Length: 147
Image (cartoon, rainbow, N blue to C red; front, side):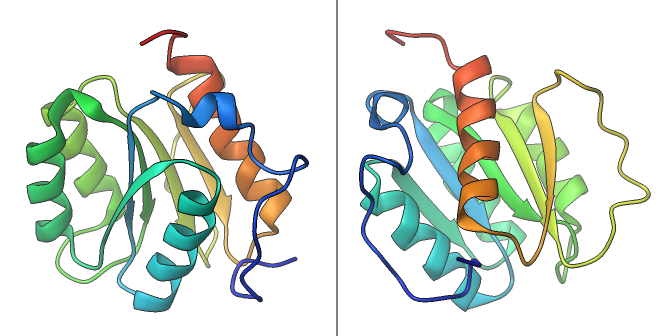
């Protein structure tokens, strides 16, 4: 199923809930309200604590309020007012342990990501399984157990 399709509940084949429990907060930032709402619904239904913002300034305020509890930033690269890359840089400065999942409908040619880093990219539209895998990989690698 492509993100943007029908909403559905998680089952045992979906996100591994052990990653969701006590793993901090996920912040979603996209200037498309529908995308924010859809991702919020998917991740909340899987047990994650999730916040959403449609503007980078709103995201910065939410990140500052959550501080060290923020573990994953999911951001569109192209937004009005500030790019997702600029936003991620500012949020990482506020929350050094945060991982970043960039998303865009365009190729990310300018984006330099190292293998094994706390940064990943996914191209829109993406399938639920691909999206979940990206989140599980980042959270599983960089959020220690019992934290």
